[in-house]
Length: 195
Image (cartoon, rainbow, N blue to C red; front, top):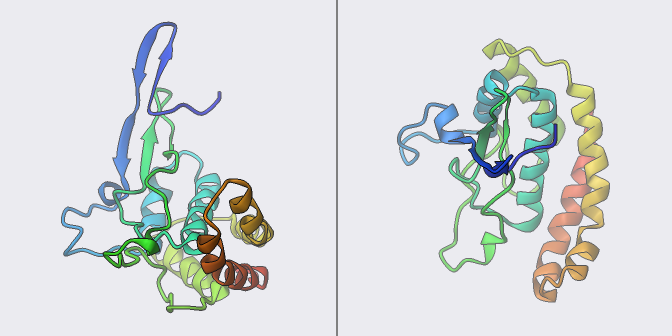
């Protein structure tokens, strides 16, 4: 069955799907007082997503794009899950995504990886830490190799991002500003080790 948007018409009947924010699935009532990490979010996602092995890859890729393009506005209301009429639960389509590093308000990156250091990130360490957190939380996950290979493959797609941005008409100064970060991130991901 093809994926559905949040609303559609099926046989001339409007179908509305349930949407739940990342804050909601992690049980956060006051986001200012209760920070969450990507590790927390993925543990919660593992407990409710219909196909977690697919969703974790999508989730990680989205955060890699956040890092590559300088989208720091990654709070828990900018990520949501869709509850389909067939009972399946998956990540909602990407929304509210842009180069927020350009915003004059100096928006800070809200959701980070446990052990994430500013600047260069050790993705092998981050994923090993995630495996430990999954084990401690009782989250069964056998897809580490698929995730690692997907991330390494995605590093090649990131290297092509400046060309794609140019073709899409993104302003040259934005592409130039993000170019070094994109290349550094791709280099980091290309060396990720087995979990």
